Length: 494
Image (cartoon, rainbow, N blue to C red; front, side, top):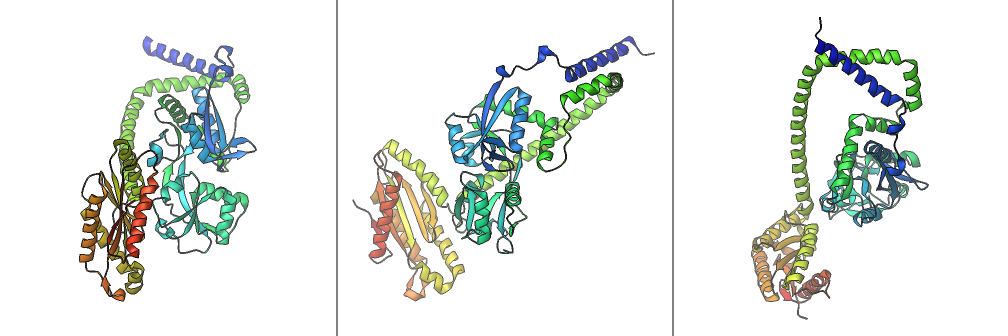
């Protein structure tokens, strides 16, 4: 015979199950939600991301919108989504006019401004090309091509590190794909789901997608930096709709699969007609789980440990990938020194520091003399080798922490020297000029070795000056060095 404690446990489980079912299927006024007491979160989305987020005659719709509303239901909060211009949306959130951004991909720049939720939707950023184009198969094939990207979107920040790519900002997807088909664009980079949905809706033919995406990301919901309370609420609701399958049902609905929607009234009617069957089933399940509780608990603990280990490994891999991506985005692929993007970032910080501390900041603009003639004579492979050697010389001269040598574009380089007056910068420039000449790279067409011209400028920034002014006067000095016969250093004097 079963003991008294075993019988008591089974009875408790049965009545607990009945109570839960009654709360699920019968309306109880004491637990009804009062909509007037619910908090409201305002999320802003991109109006041009159908079917993920889009504007339909003033109403935000899309799979991410449905997910956001489902999150609101889980956390007892009204989530209102507005679809609008994406660049404007990001500015509004940063200025506190809304609580967050819906469907946004993290990037190094965005990580400084926002905190991000757990992953929301998978984004395969893919290259769309004109049908029959076999020359574009990867991101490297986009060099010197006209590539359409959305203003303020993640592909724009992703491709800005490739200065050889001619980026054109897109405001309207249908027009952009028609331009691609007409040959006015060479490619478009966008989330594959968004691109394919637009092509289906606008019925534009003659467009193909490169099968391998250039990057796969997971979009998220972003809130202002350090808004921990809002982020915790969103993550809590997101975790619940993932666990209970709500997010899967939303995805199935938007991907065109049949979904059966059962209303509360339907469940109540079924309950009223079949209450005895439900109670019997619940009783059997309760008894089963009482007996199997210990075993299932052990299995669950083992599963949680394994899952935690897998997530830790995945996070470590993601961190490593992000570090590698950041390094790639600021390093010139040919010469392995910093690129124009890296210079812009470092120069902006150095300018502000020099202005605050009253220190001089110097620039040396460097251009290889007669490089086009050299390329035409020996070929681009030899030209690339020459660029690499000259970059190594420049990098070898610049040794102080805080100074920077970067490839500015083509055959032009730039050196930034902190806390350095014009005289000191001229000494560094002359050392670079001398070492390049000593390389002895022959340029037979001009009966001379390959040389460089250098323009030097130094200022103590103040609040009346703009950063571009120092770049401009260094450029003028460089042009003057070219005009006066090349292979020399000119210091700009005001």
